[in-house]
Figure 1 (cartoon, rainbow, N blue to C red):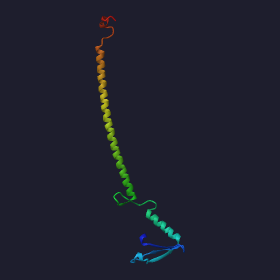
Figure 2 (figure 1 turned 120 degrees about the horizontal axis):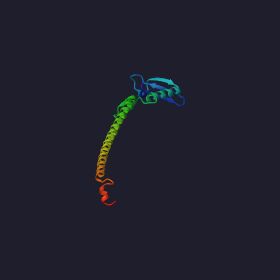
Figure 3 (figure 1 turned 180 degrees about the vertical axis):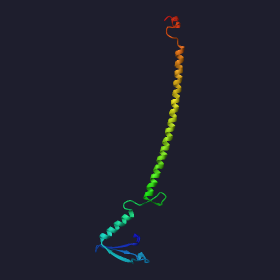
Figure 4 (figure 1 turned 135 degrees about the horizontal axis):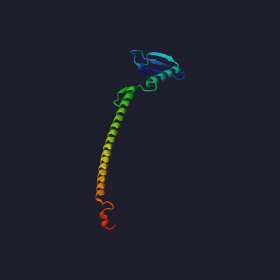
Length: 144
């Protein structure tokens, strides 16, 4: 029995309601079928149960996907996790590439500084060797 095939007849004066379920083969629009008498409490309980069933107990058991197909909540969660992991991997790759580029730049800079340091040491040694030592005869010639 589907909720579309059930017709509700409630009378506020009598504070009672009846549910008409269509017999097989008859049209539901005609109002023919079994008539079940029930109290408003039973009716309210039935309506609440229908809502709970429709909503999957508070959580939808199916979710529309981006393509329009309805998929289960579990599958939707798995898809979200998969996409999240994919984004995470892409971010890690981008970060690794950035770090590798930074590392290459720093290595070049270190090599350049090492070359400068070597050149400065060579120049310092040349200057030391080319200057006369204190107390040599060349300084005495100037009269110091």
